[in-house]
Length: 229
Image (tube, rainbow, N blue to C red; front, top):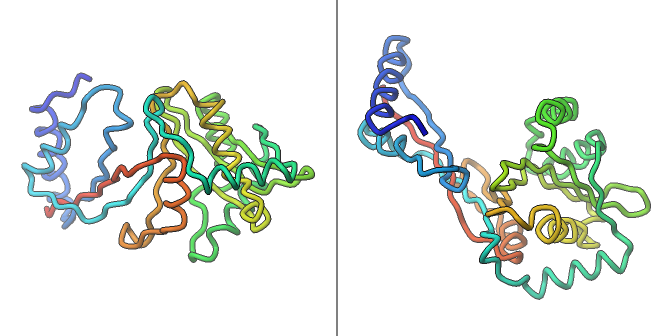
């Protein structure tokens, strides 16, 4: 909260000068969405405007305001009941290896791989205990859905969500998300489901965003800017 508007202009001015000195042609900047601010802090957006930045990527995330949280959609209620009938249970713990395998399998069809390895996830959790938490939905001791949550204190953010084919068929991820919203993070100001876009924001995963909207979530954008140096 010590960076003022004039400071932000000066900082971006020095960045642009430094990039020019290094003969870099473009400076790319990802703005932190206001949801994660603890206090109003959009001086950077004004500085970007002053230096002629343009939006080059816009991801769509889904967020719930917990104090105004609407009811679940009928489809979400139905899948939650289905998971309960099939004995799916939710646990928190250190099962990063099976979770990483589940995540890798889930995104392989998009030609993608997880940004973090299982060891890196575990290392981050060890360095930020209580801030990074892993939850899983299990059936007969098998992990069939999981969520890695970054807890910022006022906002909880799902960094990774994944489900196996069995988990999808049983509604395991819906049960897991309901548990997080109703119990683990019910007192937070907001819950962020993360983005539902691909190809640098140009493709919307409609099935994924539909699931999140079924919990009452609505859109928040994550913008990327470029300044020509």
